[in-house]
Figure 1 (cartoon, rainbow, N blue to C red):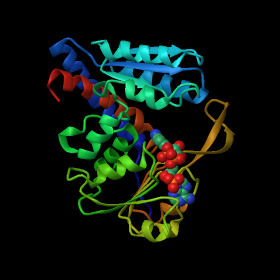
Figure 2 (figure 1 turned 90 degrees about the vertical axis):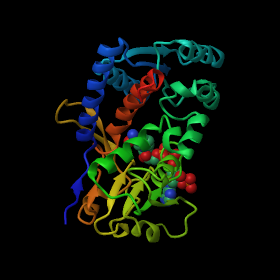
Figure 3 (figure 1 turned 135 degrees about the vertical axis):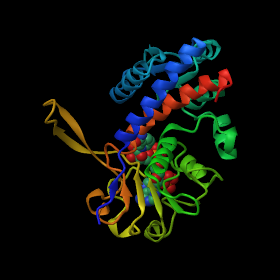
Figure 4 (figure 1 turned 180 degrees about the vertical axis):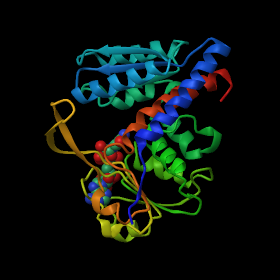
Length: 302
Ligand code: NAP
């Protein structure tokens, strides 16, 4: 059996079109557009490329986008003051501070300074609590888990009563996606197990999974024999295992691998995400959706 490929690139294109149409409608009816402030501190190449893509995507959807680049030696006090400025700016609905931040800045303090109603990354403790409560309380689910759930829903995989096993318990992927899948809600209502480095028998748990979500950051961690035949496999891992010359551009690019042995796993799974092109494109997509929703909450039309 060859698994159905779950292509984040395709789902992304569909969702971005839906967002663009909504932005156009709100602009015509209400005369406003979603506003996103993107704060980049320093010039870490990975952060620069993430921010560039976020800015480009926001502009292509008709958002107001404020790209605020700050030097690596900005003081914590000045960064907090900048966040306060955007908290008070009525034309800004979402504030994104690209992580990681330089060592002299306390990331927790910075995240906590963002107005929870503009925290479109969903990392503020208030939004973590709202996610845990679920239902209409949850305003901004963090972007990667929200993208994973969207992929599962749009693939048509039954989640109600499904055994979901999440490999990894990070605050940005493992814990939130586990919480989302156990809510009594559409695209959830599952029985959830989280496994990690303290788990005794990883293979035993993975093999029980109807939906296996892997976010460990260990290339090839999940072996094909750990996959239940027909399962839906979501590979969140993005691991750089080397470099190659791109056929398209002739430039050096990273060779990426997921946490699952894709080539063999696709012969066993019912559906599976590739790396790259699976979960990756969904993170920016859901950031855009959260920013649009932030405006809709403010207008009372969400
Ligand atoms: P993280 O903070 O390093 O957390 C990794 C988790 O996996 C930890 O809970 C760890 O367990 C667990 N783990 C690691 N090795 C394991 C093993 N051998 N057996 C069982 N559990 C193990 O990583 P993250 O931020 O969640 O990211 C995970 C992966 O997803 C990375 O490759 C990252 O690049 C990728 N990612 C992709 C996107 C995207 O596509 N947009 C977004 C975010 C992350 P302990 O808690 O016991 O240490």
